[in-house]
Length: 208
Image 1 (cartoon, rainbow, N blue to C red):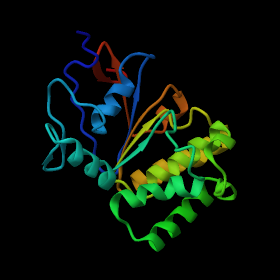
Image 2 (image 1 turned 180 degrees about the vertical axis):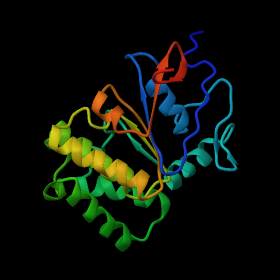
Image 3 (image 1 turned 90 degrees about the vertical axis):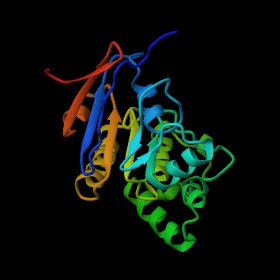
């Protein structure tokens, strides 16, 4: 059996943006999937405040993700049969949020990320960068307490990457969210409050 992660111990603090860097195949995406309750670990503990998530059932983990997590996937995971507008609002449906309130939040997000003109379009007709920004809007719609982002600027040009990075900073420093992002981008990592390197299954502070 391959041990992808060994003895990893990490705490996400509200208001902090933490970057994890590492070579391809080092386990960065595995770490995000475990923290995001998408995968189960073979050992260890996972807590959200005083709530123990270790051993929680599938339904409990899904409800936790909907209420508290914003997951920005590298592969977008937009539903191709739904429009941009429907994809973003799907996040609100999962938690039973009032429609009018969710729609107002969706409009503001789509405007700030520069994809408001694409609301009636379907994901296959969008560029990779547009899909990334739509997926980001969906992940942020419910103002998550914890944001997990897998290479969030990987398909964006410099201007749009700057807009998305500003959103992440604001949600951490002004909104009090805990942000963890994995990236190969030195610029993105440099903007974080802390940077950890994942190598040989272990996390260490950069420069340690």
